Length: 147
Image 1 (cartoon, one colour):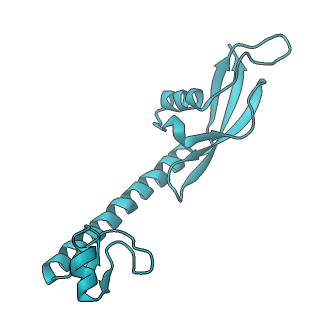
Image 2 (tube, helix red, strand yellow):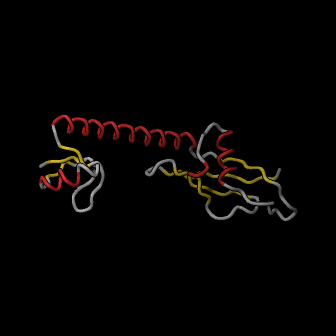
Image 3 (cartoon, helix red, strand yellow):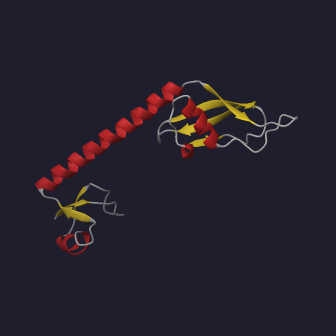
């Protein structure tokens, strides 16, 4: 008996795979638990179309991330902070402030996708990494200046 898996099952296969199982295992366990559906011709066509559309959407998201990375390029962003006499800033620069600086330039990047290298406690130039996609990471430079 052939079934199409709806989720990954260890030792059997991965989601959207067509696998051959014993009839009792398929009818009594996989299908009633919602782990699989019968592998009829119509179900195979529906699954193949879903896989094709998901691949197209994933490719579009990746291409959007690459274009955003290219638009940002080697830009250096200025972030203003209150500074003491020794050049040390009050508080620290966070990913939220970097996200706001990017928004001022027209780039919308979620603050959760920004990671700063090291601590930013003094005036100077630093870098952060933007995680735009699982395959697309972009390093951006920012400069902390006095208000």
